[in-house]
Length: 113
Length: 116
Image 1: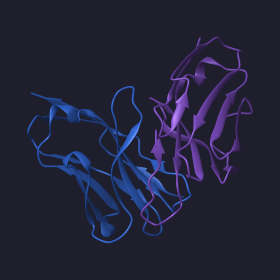
Image 2 (image 1 turned 60 degrees about the vertical axis):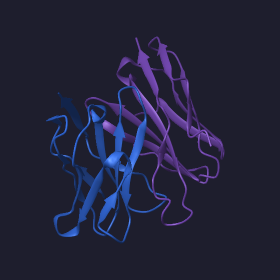
Image 3 (image 1 turned 90 degrees about the horizontal axis):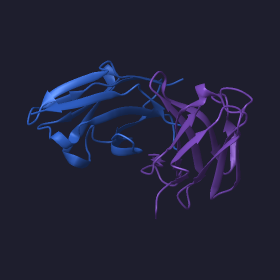
């Protein structure tokens, strides 16, 4: 069975600073990997995904993530955080196209001036 | 497409009452998922359907919970009778199997359920 670990429950960064959110997964093969963002009272919006090919993937809102098979990681990064990035971020893994996504517990990002 | 549509957005009900949550997936999607989100447990999968057929309902907490998908464009999640511990945000999501690139699930806005 797949599982996802997001070790950081809450992160606070200053506006303009760089950001890295950690994600580790457990799965026997190469999974489909995702990062979603959730603003308060809203649904989940896809930031980016990885299913094959280039291990560095670009997403919306200036986010990127790198798949590292040797470390079973899929960390999310952004070079310069904006106040509007404050939200909850979820990493997810999926075995195939018709199986459910398994989510991590999420990391809440706060942005300070 | 309007995306995944859930109704109602908010529901407040008294303990013991029946609650029905509704979901309209994206047209053409053949997988549908019901998740529950709470502070304590995060996002939990309750049940999912492929081609309108329930595949795995092991996440449904109790017999009080039931879900149906009578056709490709509609699904319901019913709680009968409801209890205060059922208070949570319930999300519906859908996805398509067509093509390797279409791997993500699209989420609705959720239904915030409060049982008093």
